[in-house]
Each structure stands twice: as structure tokens, then as C-alpha cells.
Amino acid sequence: MACLPRSVLDELAKRYGEDIEGKIAEAVEDVREMISRFVWAGMYSFADRLANAVGKEIVSATLYEALRISKSTRDSGGTLDENVRPHVAKESSVKLLLDILDLDLVSGLELVRRIAILSLAWRG
Image (cartoon, rainbow, N blue to C red):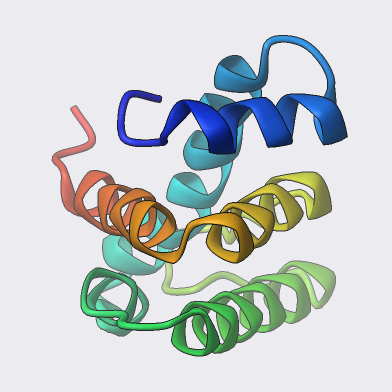
């Protein structure tokens, strides 16, 4: 991920092992998939909150709410609307994003904005 400084990537590699850029890309895709499901169902608030986040607390609260709704909807066998099944992001994906925010807030917020933008992109 070009938006993360080398020092952050090095620290993450110590914690998560080799191919940290690949792991970050997987985490971004996993969380993007969860947020996209809300967008597809016409619920834009999670993408909007991530795009406009100014601190880790906002990101954490937004991810918590999205995970909670996704998990409870999935566990009950429901859908976010009549055609959209929820996606629950993996713990490892969320943990990696939160660790990035801890190491470098500015770069982490840029990554979270990227997730929000990708979530709004056409699913063609």
C-alpha cells in the first residue's frame, strides 16, 4: 500500500509476518465488502462516516456498528434488504486496520477513506 510509510510497513511486518502489503490489501477488500453491502442496501451512513472520520474513535465505532448489524443479520438468516446478504469482516482484517490507525493516524485515515470510496464504486 503506497499510502503507508515504510516505518509503518516495517512495524506491521514484525507483527504480522511477510507480505504485509498483501495482507493490508486483503483487509481493505474484506472491510470494503462489508461496507459495500450496506451501500447496496441503500444505507450509506457507514461509508459516509468512514470517509469523513477524523479520529480512530469514529472509525472504531463505525466498524463496531457495521460488524454488529452484519453479524446479527447474518445469524438470524436475514438480509440488509430483500436482495442483499450481509458480509461480516474477519477479525484479522479489522485488527490490522486498527493497528494501522494506532501506528499512523493520518495514513490509517487515508486507508479508511479508500475503503469508503471503494465501497461506493459500481459493482459491475
